[in-house]
Image 1 (cartoon, rainbow, N blue to C red):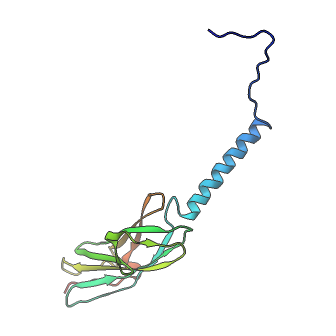
Image 2 (cartoon, rainbow, N blue to C red):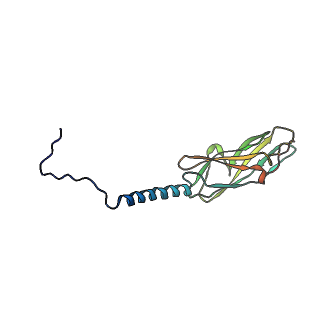
Length: 162
């Protein structure tokens, strides 16, 4: 049971300013913060990659060597890099000298060489230039994951059976 003291004044909190303006300012602040997080690479890594490589026709093994560039304001980790093509098996991948098992980081604004070793296990001729792709999986500082897909055929070598 509540009691009201006679003559007491009850005051309700009323924010200063116009309510519509207050809501507009709050929404604007949230949008600006989200845009900054996105542009800064906190929500999704901002990376690009160009592809080069070599293939040994005698052994059926080769390498693709994308240069991974971080276009964001924060670093990101590289977790996996594979070649997805019929008849091709990824052997291993390194970022610089670090194994991807160690989850190496590409610092903000820097470029790191990614080396993906593969072996052609299916014949006849397997040509990822037309069919294959490279998938690079990375994770942001907030722990969000993104996979960048690069068609191997644009700049990558043709992989032929030994």
